[in-house]
Length: 310
Image 1 (spheres, rainbow, N blue to C red):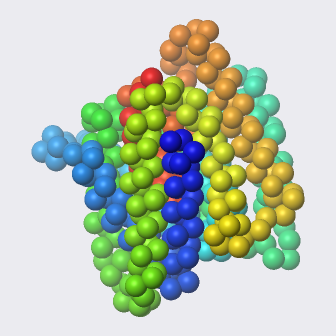
Image 2: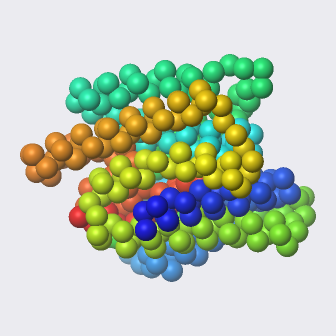
């Protein structure tokens, strides 16, 4: 189920990428947000009357993060390819985990990641700096999502807060989607690709992760799903015919390994000392029990919430 969830997310992102030439990033993201909103509201069933003004500030903030994160990710995919865009976005949760740590192993991981990022974004004649910038913006939004979702997970039970934010983000994309689809007249095939992106990157992984997290520890799940950038690069080759160079693969390998090592070390530390308040999330799913899960999400990593149960 973990492997299926990761593959579903990246195949969904590749389906969205196939629709980009016709619908553009805004059109694809609008349809994807609508699908994600419907799925999360159906599963999360937010109690709208119980959401107070204080809660609404968090919900609106999270909705804004959803909107910007997915749009920036799909813009990056359109400009630099699936594998590179997902790897850049992956730096967001990795940075949250590493910057919030005082362990030596995490410092070493950070020192390893820094040159890997430089290698991945190295200046070349064909370098698309705008695409890299959008990928890094998606990473920043993902980091904000982690912090906001932790807060909203303590304020509202279950995934109600994330579901409400997904609904608000979907509603906000109604006028954007109408304008985008008016200017980029969709074909039946591109609409199918965009809907498939929403289903494969939201509904399928959401349900798979919900079941998986009842069977495996959240941190083990996070270590396993650290391979998402690798899956994205492989799916990019198979579906989109996007090939990366050997140095790009080396950089992706270092970033994925650093996240896996940091999570594994955190798991050993927790097992020795019990449930530690310092337990951090350097993956979408490495969360304390009761926190909402972290899936982008999107996008190539869609941003949906799920309970982490151990």
